[in-house]
Image (cartoon, rainbow over all chains, first blue to last red; front, top):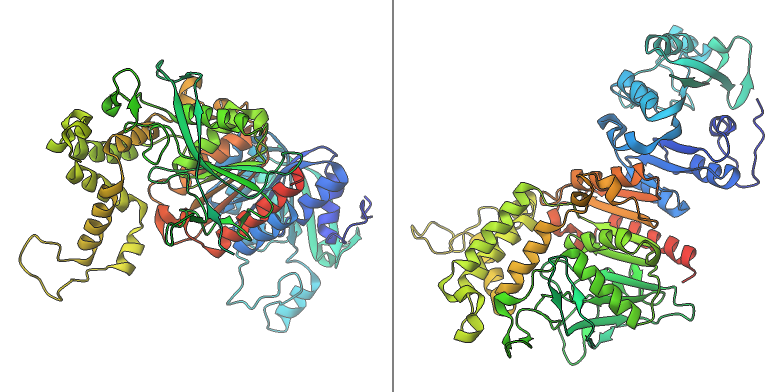
Length: 202
Length: 374
């Protein structure tokens, strides 16, 4: 799987670039927790995709509007009912699942609104986290730059635990990518990956 | 720079067939325009007004010092809807009391004011009349049709009645149909008017009186639904005019005297028959009704892109009502941006200048400008 940029625009975050590689041209995309709309803007330009971002934060909603990305201001925790009739090809949740309260419900609803789901998350099993805890400290990293008392991250997971949940929800894994600080890796991903990306189907 | 405007008036002799089966002819529409129509006629924006408002959306009426438009913070030079870039039109709707043909106008059949004989008009009837005005002004396609509340309903109606004649639809603080509670409030307002002895079955003009009491109560009811509990608490709380209880039924609380003041002001300029007509138009608006209750089907003809906004403290048309609209647009896979603005002011928030709200409208109109070449 190539991580090469498909456009000459501003560099897309490596995890978003890897997600974009999975998305077929012309797809109808729902991007949950879309931030400033970078992924959708890229998909629109490079792959003629259409779709909507979903974002709760006022500043990010403005950033999407500035890019001309269609955004729906909603809290994804309140359910994806609004998106049920949308017949999406792909639903994306990038680097946000660890901050959801009802993680299982979010994943189940994702699998219901689109044919395919893509989730990326910070891998809590990364060696640095283990090392940090051995030294008696909660890990603070680039992916998770928070103190234990102010973190929005509620449901941190390792690669293995995440796969167990997909299995429990009877979601079939059709793709995995592991990144170490943006570079794709294959060996020892459980300990070496800072980010994990999964692609699944019902 | 102050925008000075003079309303224009256009007469239509071709009968306008109405939803009720009746038709209206001749009729006149009063409207205002701001900015300039560009050479390709691609920069026209139609603003639709709500219950109490008129065609005077922005600027200062020529010859006055304080008659500022009802959406002057939104529309004008350098405003989110920039009249330096767009040619903006606002039309007084049929049945209203600000100059277009309505209950106070002469009924050609009787030589007297229409009064209660003015036909019941619907949102769709208004939109068809607006479309005729657009034709007369040489506008084949609007860059945007925009409105809040009842005005948002008209904008929505444009999207499915004239899908080829609108590029963007901007719908603020609206609902795809009234709830039973909404209709209930309208009914209380109407009962207040029609049971006022001065109403005379709607022929009060003949008696030289105005059903002021009824209109005042109607306005009070309406006004309460436009404000949030928090706004009322912050603005009035339990403040007393004279600092202590007077053990009377006079207006002792500040909120009471505020409502009475607003109501009296309103009853001096608003027509009672118009109040009945416009609240009825609100009640009847229900595009899904002709499609077995399916709003998605009702909006299936819409080809334009949408910007929909709701306000978190609006309990008249709360965000959940906008969700219904957005859900149908998503199901139809048309472009839609939806903002849920955290503003404290209730339904009235759509008329105020919340920075997030205005920034979003400004950005959306930038996008409109790019797509239509305004």
